[in-house]
Length: 97
Image (cartoon, rainbow, N blue to C red; front, top):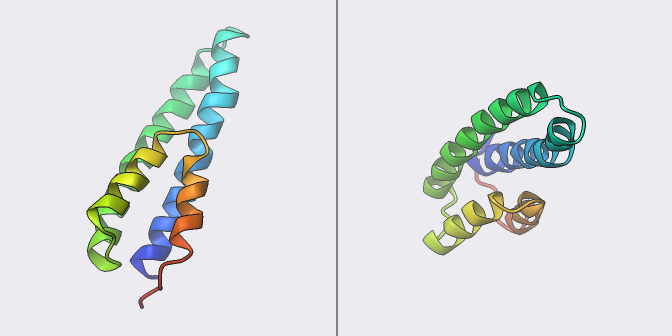
């Protein structure tokens, strides 16, 4: 699997975990008094975010992304639903073996 495919995969998974954290776990904690939801979802999302950063660095060396693109992808990972836009942008990149 190419580094770009790996990056796109971890980007999607990390994006979904962020959405789950924001729109499922946070309401469960603050509206329904279930703090364990954010502990579990937050820990999972934190691990996936670190994996995303690692894979972004690996893909930057392989694809290569420009520094501007890499910074854009990082910033988009901090925005809800930004990872889906990152995936759209990465679809245009040629995949190397």
